[in-house]
Length: 290
Image 1: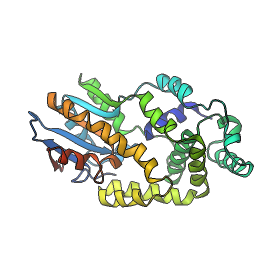
Image 2: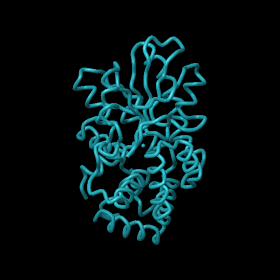
Image 3: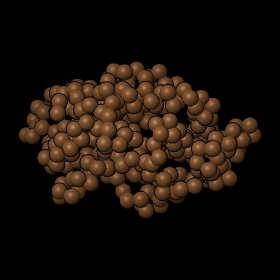
Image 4: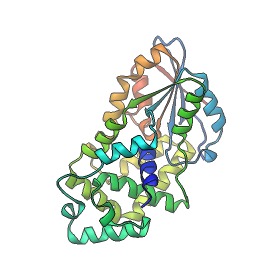
């Protein structure tokens, strides 16, 4: 197993685009001296597929700070934190799964990445599910390697230009949300549903990616709602609750500086998404076309 690839894929998920009315927004009013911007990212889309990517990066450089889901750390920090947070204690995947499901999971991971449950069975199920989803997506798209996420590119450009990079969450917080908020037995059920309905999951990821490329937030929202891999309450833990936590931080950040806020684009959609919440908070949120 390529550990570096595992760490990179995990961070990339921790969420050909036409940068149009649906993906790029200008935030103004409500006492802001300078406007801020909100951009929806797709963590597994190569920058060369993003239309006007240089203009997006330049817009980020013009602001005082790039704000992301987190300040993306160096790989060694990710590796250390994952070893602390992502490993099972007191149980193994063999104990969480039936013998039949354990064998199926072992076969699937062996075929996908050349490592089975003997090597991966101490990882928490949601970490395995994240890895499985991203790897099957990359395989379906014919991707030979993990692309550098636009989130990371924007943050690196900010640092190179002596601009601030601000994370709305820490790596510890993000891992805790993803790996610890749902009971392990339920995590194992989600993983096995993903494996048993592999083609359905691939089709969903492709359709959501196509919606992203088209800037079609309404379609993306509909696809996300139709996804039954998790319950509404579990989705709330991974999305809505995080949006609410971010909305407690964004007003103060934007009040003192111009921000380029870049987060996974599904965090923008719907009545609980950032676009709707910012409008409800009194800001003018207008589409930007580059």
